Length: 366
Ligand SMILES: Nc1nc2c(ncn2[C@@H]2O[C@H](COP(=O)(O)OP(=O)(O)OP(=O)(O)O)[C@@H](O)[C@H]2O)c(=O)[nH]1
Ligand SMILES: [Zn+2]
Image (tube, rainbow, N blue to C red; front, side, top):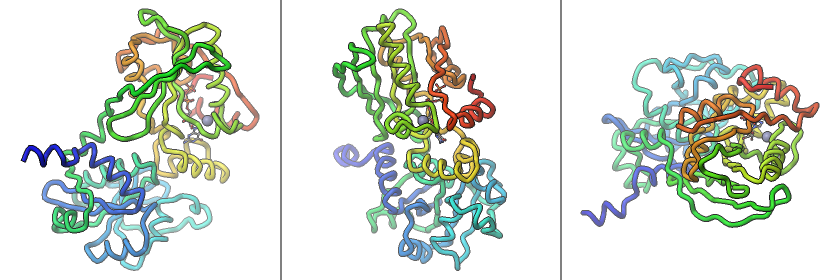
């Protein structure tokens, strides 16, 4: 028995496997309180799988309240909506509900029947899981009578809700993997540290400039990955210039730490960020675009940055930011912010509206 339990995947390992399954369109089985559901992500659902799922039960579509609001359908569970999938509706209908790309062209998708009775905890967890796989936040759940047997017969990942829900909510511990010297144009004395989370999600990086004194507040920047801004020189945001200005200031002062957090698109992933950009071309601002996709304005887990700084031995920072939420998060995680150092660079005609929206709707300081 002990050998078997040591070989079997833990809840965290099952979650990592489930993310891969969902991205590939493979169903997972979620069980809890005597119920069992097959769960698939709408984004990766193929017609043959939908037909196989329908043969087992009546599918229910779980969407966030944000997406339901755009679809003008009630979210009786508060933060999520459960919608009955009619027998004659296929994958295209589901995708149209999940993906706002054609909302303006084809506004009416209903009437939709939102479910009011019954429990929604498994649906909520399924949506969190799909989000953490960086897919569109839309999950199809099919109630099945014998979840355990179905998982075993078909080699599907089994997710007991009581085990996985707490794992999804907590911040995964991060481990320092390796660090190496990296001279940079902005700072000769650079060192890159790699941190790997236990849950199999993205690694994050800390770029240490010089040898900051751990007993003093360190000049720090929490930078969220922005492929378009950091690498391509996008004019739609200010990320690239902010990244370079932060490193330059650390180089000038001779010490600092820049965290490069792989939370692309404020945590929704690059594919979803590009969907948001496409909606912005239809006239929606950065916050509205996230909402229409079914996300909150900001899906980042701000605990990660604080966790890395503490692991590196820092307890107080001079934080380079215009975002008050970052300061509040650091302090709630026990780090002292002795000073906010403004970081105003990279304003362009193309990003003026984006920066104004962040100031008006997300509390950024101009
Ligand atoms: N979803 C979404 N993400 C965006 C958009 N534009 C930029 N981003 C992402 O926003 C994040 C910007 O992160 P930060 O540089 O930390 O910016 P911030 O939260 O405004 O805070 P400060 O720069 O510290 O003031 C990056 O992950 C970008 O990829 C957008 O229109 N939609
Ligand atoms: Zn950017």
